[in-house]
Image (cartoon, rainbow, N blue to C red; front, side, top):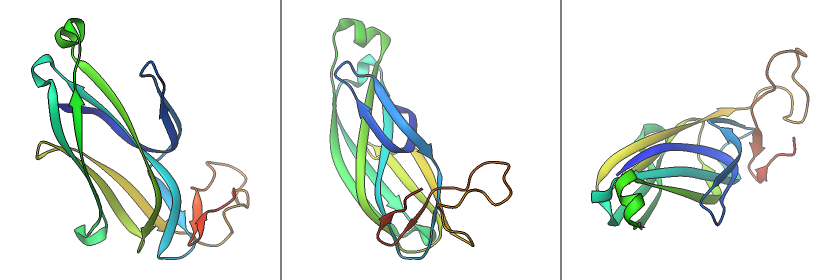
Amino acid sequence: MELDFGLLADAATVDASGKLNVLGVFDRIQARDFPARHGRLSLVLRFSAGGGELGAHQVEIRLRGPGDRELLRLDGRLDIGGGSRETREGIKVPHVLNLDGITFPEAGTYFFDILADGRSLMSIPLRLDAASGAPASMPHASGGGPPPPFAFGSGGPAQA
């Protein structure tokens, strides 16, 4: 079993037909102060398995902070099944995990490590920076270039 992709987003869903819908992909956010609590983020994954990989798989998701300290660990089971066509062509399994109220103790790079059956599949980085200067709701000071990254305070997401 492999992971086709993994990303962080503001929101994501999987509809009844298996179609993945994603809004607001990011890999960097700013916080006004630390520890900083983030209201919600969606961890979006798509597993890929061949016909010989049908059945149950143990999945672990770990959030590591600066210094490799584990902040969060989620253990689960992914059951992969399919018909004869899916078995020949392989199976794609989208998965969305909504994580509410994660507290990030300090600025730095965090990693969402995804493991299946004890094997590392992917590590998704998330950079947290200390916000500087203007509040997040102010437009970019130079008037050109990209807008500043999303910022949040210790009480949850900031209004942009």
